Image 1 (cartoon, rainbow, N blue to C red):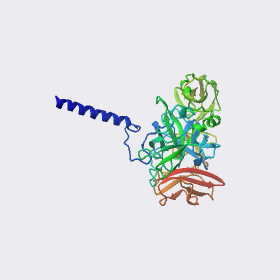
Image 2: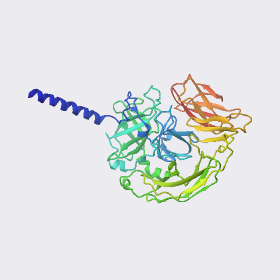
Image 3: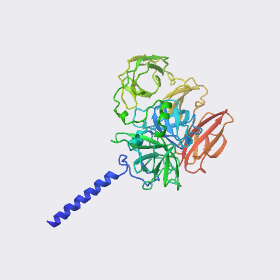
Image 4: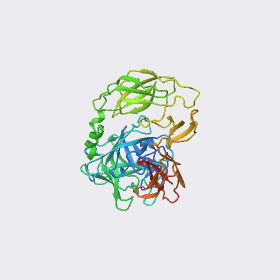
Length: 482
């Protein structure tokens, strides 16, 4: 009997230890293996952190279709540059999307290190890979979500250590707050089990769960650290301290405990109309909805398939087929995901085209139009398609006698991603264009007369900004040296 008792006791202890290990394991990412502690944690999936934005050398957080929150020290020269969202690996952006930074608004606080980026075209936040996150109000302090010893979570593509390279795969790290209070300009998190953010994570998100763990809340943007590089402790811009300013600039309300009870849907959009149809595009306009808290966007449907989410009350449907009839409808959404009823349904047709020309029915490229990967345009007699790496030449149109390959002048992209020995640039410069390659610390490491192929074998592993100055205008993009 004694032997049987000991055997049972041994089994109980074994099961208890297994259960405890499961409880304290860091965030599961669909059974991805834990890699070595970067100083920054483990491989994570973008669908588990869809609010993460990639600014190329810095991180950021999606808080609305046209708004990214980041650190002030990340925004120099960023207007006109494209930022990316929606991908786990920088080498595979097939699930991602991009938008151009239209404006920077700096938080008027000398030590807070926070800025807003307004995007030129809205992000589609309807899928699983890119979504907005609520940003913190003072409630996160009064409710105890941010306090010493409380767990938080950081993500980014920053360096794997003080002397380590930058990862291709998005990283995540569970951290704990140090001494912190609402009035602090920046909040402090301690190194936890060897994990801490590093160079390249700047501007990226620090998030916490609310009380019932039903949603995450943005509480900080990576600002800097003290002590040994990438260890000891780090500082994040205090988002709750800037909540009223963020709301004034964006119209997006912060997270509040009482705000979680909002169940009122917006009114349905009205007066949906179609206009200015071409062979491949149709313009849509409608009257705005209203909401008890605030409308954050509109979902656009072609037949019963959602094709986009926008913040404005207009949208241009592109890449349509010539001489084809289409059905459209829209609905409104608010900050907590309440959806309105559908608007009126309209039927509109594109103009007819000549099927004998492969470029027939494809609209000409326009600097004022919004494009997404997969869209096609005609430019200077050639057919082009937008990919996640830039404009790709498809074929010359039958009317193009010169067969000259010339991409749109205001587009610039680099391949391969990541690059090793050489980068190839897709761009159409003026005759006397020059280039500069700038590292993550703002230092120019390579420059000269513009050429489409540049040898980068002497560059260190990391993230770089390519700037081309052509005819007095500056064009920028980013690339990764592996």
